[in-house]
Image 1 (tube, rainbow, N blue to C red):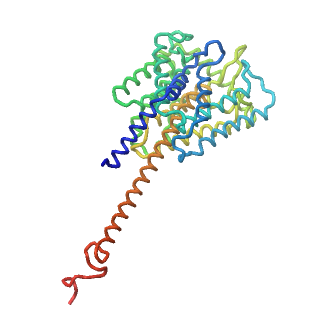
Image 2 (cartoon, rainbow, N blue to C red; image 1 turned 120 degrees about the horizontal axis):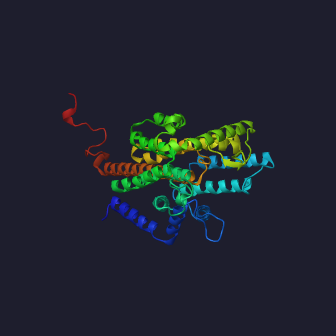
Image 3 (tube, rainbow, N blue to C red; image 1 turned 180 degrees about the vertical axis):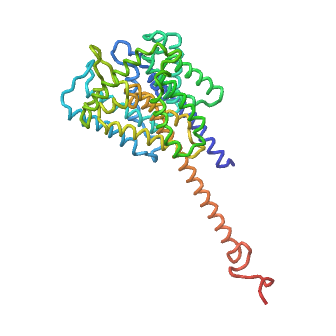
Length: 429
């Protein structure tokens, strides 16, 4: 007769086979695979493929049940809803706002609602988890390799972009999702292979912020296991401080010496952005208002921190940062054997990239990461709950067996004597 452990192993094997069979999982994988491709258009339409994929993912999730319904993590949907609600309030209070490229506040709010649904779809397991990570890894690695060969466009000669659309966007995707992809590898050779492609891609983007962010992410993956939760709490803030305090002469050293002009422009834009944010009301200037004019040209904000304040004021920024801080705390609070240091390392990368790149915190890339992080937390907590229940059940069975054995012995005690009986040899005379 098969033991309980054999039956459990067989059931898990059957579940794996079931999960990987069926066309619906292939659909999940394909949708996740195209999310990083910012320049891939749907033929004959004006829509980008990854925006369509987000909508399809939300539609699929609407007809599926969560895989671990007992692990709710209520604060995640509450904070996501609060962020969207803050933007709705800002939209209503600002009235008429001048928008650029026909992008108004309503479209921005609708887009953020879809991204919030994306987080919960992945985080609850409604999108097949293994297909999600496999699709994400395939899409990011494939787009990176294609960009090496200038496939997908080369709008910035000398810098990797391809289907990512922009070198800075490519740097964001590779530095935030790269650690998750490396951590998902099932063998050391595969981990090194993934890491080589991602590192080569980041070097190809020539994004200094991405290079420093991913370097610090790798540092956390190396030292994070020995850090306490309190020490872990300070690491993201340390990353932000280090990236923000890099001396100017270091930024333009070596291969980056020709970036002096772009750095000067960024500095001028940051001054204008800061002035605009300081003039804004406490609820911000409204959704999709994070752009500034410089001469006859307009530019999107070059800081996600200022962009969040521009759209929804300090409340919006605090809510978003609170969401990342909460997820990071949950990740580092997991038992050592269940922690994913590579996944933890992505949050400092998000916060670091947000210093010099706009719309990082609520980007598709960051939302995909948040969804995967939430799923990891739910999965581990569910596994811990199952282990605790199994241990309690085993203890109850053992206790019942001991009680039954005691009841079957003469006199009700294992020794065969009536309770309270003392052998004559032990009696005091």
